[in-house]
Length: 401
Image (cartoon, rainbow, N blue to C red; front, side, top):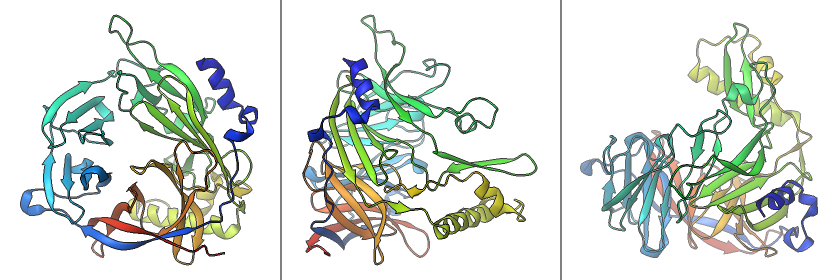
């Protein structure tokens, strides 16, 4: 069953029409209004470096995961600190670098530390339940280490192999590693780890940009106009986004830990051609960043060096960045489209095959962390570059058309 599923996913033209209905993206428009905003709580030894926000609408609270401070804090939307867990360390309830956080239906939550394959479970009130050690560094796929994500209820992990950037773009003289499998990792009946099993292949071509300096130095980053497959993980689930088909088309594919496709949807956006102005603007952003981070980098010819490795498709990918899986049960997509000073996003309900997605206009500075039925949550930097958690209320208005 898994093999036939892989063939179907890698051959989109074989999908049935009802599963791949394109939609008209002209409908109601949603905007947001400022409502909640709060900073850290230094009087309680809780600080924000760059928090990642996860909402828990059932209990009217939000989680702030701050990897730099090895802390997870829980707040009311108004900014009252309820409790915090974690500190720097490797003991029970301590974190080296907390990453993803998932809340279950009862309010208990799981904190993932991908770097050391550890998953720590807490009660809804923040009491430590247990820490689960996943597959260690001894497990690999074709010699590459693994990046695994939170396990399903029956202990099955999904993830990808870690490919070094220089191998991905072929700077070492070897063939480009432009395909990356989504792997399933589980134990055998004797509790030994089974070799990772590929479930679906991601096309990673055009993901990495390399700047090669005359002295032999190299700087790696993301291609600003790249169209690689993107993937987001939840316990026992993976949601893949593809943009390499028809210009302006976006595919969303949700897969279970068993390797089954549980949802497949396509959206059609208006294709936008890449222009010289777009290339100039993208180059300037990168050159400004290099000037700040590498003040000793050569200045002469730097723009030509940058553009030499630039991927320039005929059409710009419609979605920027990975999809966001939200507490509202939707997938949110940040598009390249703008409406006046606002960035256009689309929200698609997971499992829905034909309903119109929501068109949402958000401030340019707001990168979504999570969304509930009523609010969009993210982070804002103030004039002193101090991060604040913000929750903006969703409000509908008539279509612009």
